[in-house]
Image (cartoon, rainbow, N blue to C red; front, side, top):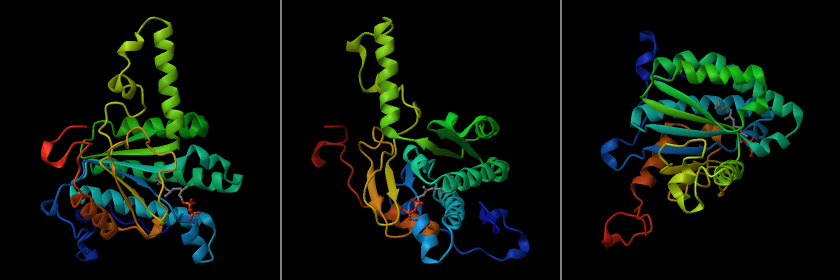
Length: 269
Ligand code: FPP
């Protein structure tokens, strides 16, 4: 792989010279979202435009993930969720699946120590069992090794599908009701949310999708009920701190009403 960019500018070797400012957006420019979730789209098109195999796009996409983590650390975003492999991605050709899972395993091997060093806690959402025992252990180890970190919470969605997640939650509640552990009347939004994989985490405030496509593609459907959506016309491998700040700037300019009237204060309508 090419040389990865350092996660923290302070981690750069002294001979490397001053780094360019990572962000044009500063926290005082407006509200910083607590939780940013990203649909990283356009790796294939990025590679095709260069006459490269798709895996080259995914590799460059992994670099963009590093830049994004650094941008979160720089701007104070506390939660980042990235859609790295959807439940639908299993329908891709076997060679691409194997390239992509190989890359994810490489990322897990290479990055956990550095992520941990800069204070990132890693969690994984989705059906990890589908990746097999070896990768399952790597995932568990990454979660374990970073469990005490608090600076940035990184969720990596792997074999994730929001409808699967919602159906699984409904099934668990149905089972509990059948066994008399919960009454149907007690099933409310909070009881439902408690059954989701990211239970207890803040909902995303901002969802970014790259590559110009404008849909959610089965990503965090329950959690995105009040998220602001920002669609950027950049292919994921080209995504950098300036794009991240552009999205944060757009977020800061939005009036979040959660269904209430602007003159009626906060609270859901
Ligand atoms: C969508 O682009 C991207 C993916 C299916 C994979 C995303 C994976 C990475 C960015 C790799 C590394 C991830 C981590 C967490 C290290 P696409 O292939 O659908 O692109 P296209 O729409 O242009 O064909």
